Length: 296
Image (cartoon, rainbow, N blue to C red):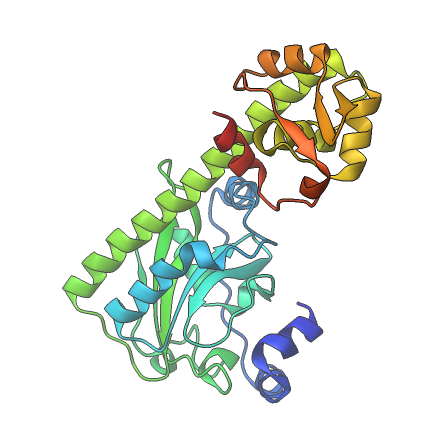
């Protein structure tokens, strides 16, 4: 855990309170490792979500979870075997890049089963009573964690809620939260599938690109896609493409050479001829998925 990130996310006062609570409190009783822990941790890392700020793409799940459970805080967490990462949260400030030791969390217990973990009153639960979780600044007395289950039974993390008072959910709330967690897990899988599809497509395109530019790099391929989609690319990429004979300078800009046109066809891009201009050299900021979409 980065102390600087923790202070930025929670404030110096809260970090000092947490340090005091950790030093003077009992430890959370550690949960046993899931039987498929090695596979589970691998799957979590394969999501590619840890270390990225994707909170906006999942905030709908935490906002709705907070409303359903009527709790102070709701979080979508991934646990990689060492740390818990709050990918998105509603309530207090959360840093999606800040990992919390997994053995200090409620959610470690949610990895053991596809069923939810409900802790109505942590002070009455020997696993959590008198631990830092129940003391300032965390003040988590009530907890409800709903596993993010994959189709083949791997638990990636949780969609959970905490509350400073006891938290008892009705059957209706549990039912709705199960559905919401299932939908959140499906959203994660969809993002993984899209990422894998993009990676596979890019690998195929890069191999074809190198038939025309043997020393071509991924940056040059992206620049070529940018040029075909928008008639623009970064200046250093323009230089590389011109050196490789893919584009040629004309009055006021550039155009594809015969090799460039053949490359465009080999990549299955639209047949129009694009031209860059001096005014279009600024980077456009679109992602690779966005570029590929524009070229379909």
